[in-house]
Image 1 (cartoon, helix red, strand yellow):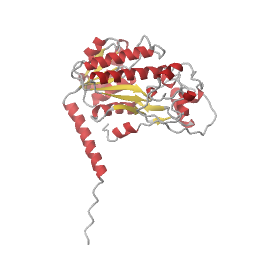
Image 2 (image 1 turned 60 degrees about the vertical axis):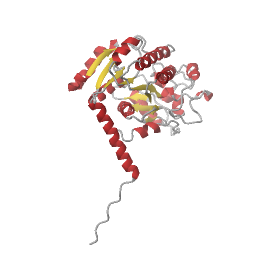
Image 3 (image 1 turned 45 degrees about the vertical axis):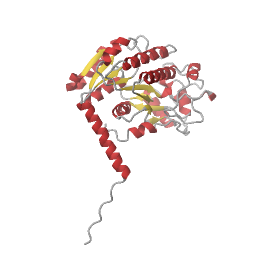
Image 4 (image 1 turned 90 degrees about the vertical axis):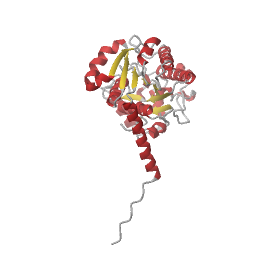
Length: 345
């Protein structure tokens, strides 16, 4: 009997992918074995809290920076979940408008995961929020520049800092796709009172300007509308129910201001909390990460998806006629998808 033919060697691309995966795994193991200390700021929000939990599970020591009003809530909700990881966790009261408190929190840290949570005394996005968020971003990046141990900043921004790129036709990107190279138009955001987009755009621009000027290594994660089991909101609205001239329903989550236009232009995107956390960890642990990364895993561009989104946010979503229209997707997250191909969760 003739011997069986030798199996064909794996394609070069597959070998390269395996090798790259092993390299990433080794880098993470080295980070943990070196007992790296990382900071999560603000750890009191849904994203920040989830980041703290995941980083502890992956073996990191964590400085959890929280606002004073959230301290008791953070401890009650999370500390019992960490078990033996409690010894790796330090909680700091940090005022984002107080430079010195930020410096104290970052002491000894090698990385910062920064996500902005509106202060207790100013919980809504309005025309004044941009000033607050910009001041916070400025203080944080300045403090990072003065922290000798800090090697990387993962700055949480938003897709709203990307999608409002055109001023004609009262809509974002009517003729072109958007990606990480796109920036929302500041004057357009002011004109239509898109305060969330304005705040995120100005804060991220401020952070990038300081990072480049001070020599701080930074990447940003521009996430879509955040979804998760503990993020159900009973006041959001179906995109199709918003007014065409940006006069949205009261109590609409700030991200969704102008949702009808984002929906029709194929740039209304959402992201699951778990996926957003993984993206942050990935851009931190992968030394090849750079620049901005659009992060989403749901595109809302048809009636069925819009209804599902409404159902996840409203106890009694508005009724609407059946619509078979599917709007072309005009937003790309290929850069992040490529980076996360071999991400070891």
